[in-house]
Length: 114
Image (cartoon, rainbow, N blue to C red; front, side, top):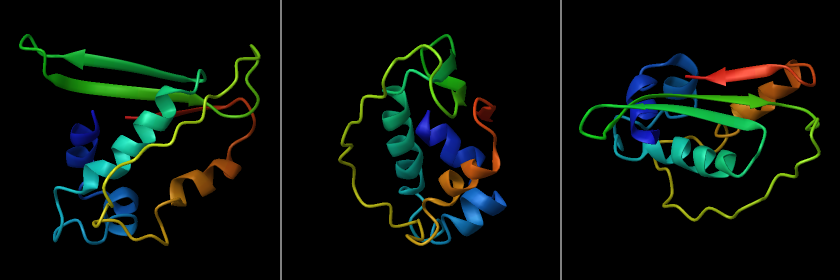
């Protein structure tokens, strides 16, 4: 899923140009940003993933929805430490730019990542 996302957003203004300005120098690293987010999100019960696979079992498409704010059902987020190689394609100053934008959304609104 992370590799598909990196390919899909390689030339995106936010996820490519701003967050991963060194992606042409380190194209094999861009998926690490996505992988870290996915592994962390997998443990949050407010996240929902849908995955489509091809007949041979390869991931063909995916979508993630996350409900920000306080969970209405009381389930707790299980924090995990995710150890991954350094994402050399990313600019450390902007790695968290997407999370900083979450403050622009009201509590309980759905945000989709495709």
